[in-house]
Figure 1 (cartoon, rainbow, N blue to C red):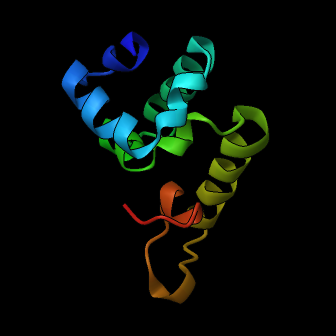
Figure 2: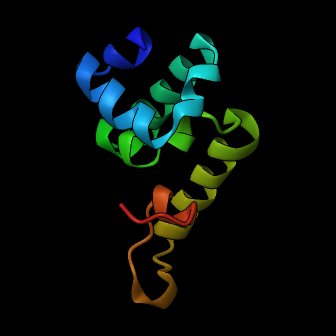
Length: 98
């Protein structure tokens, strides 16, 4: 859990919020969590609380899931497409609105 704490969350926040919502996070490798957190926060520019709201972002395959979806989202945003007039976010493309 230290790898998640490095991104500005307290131990209590990680234990009480993240583990309560997605206990399977304990089965993920440290390397996978660090890669996904770095990509989500650094490249995708999502706030750390987006990961807390949708912790499965930590388990998705970076090369086959997160990167392609983010690239498609960026293209849709560049051309101004908004399905049903709503703003698209990376998390909303996964079926959850934050």
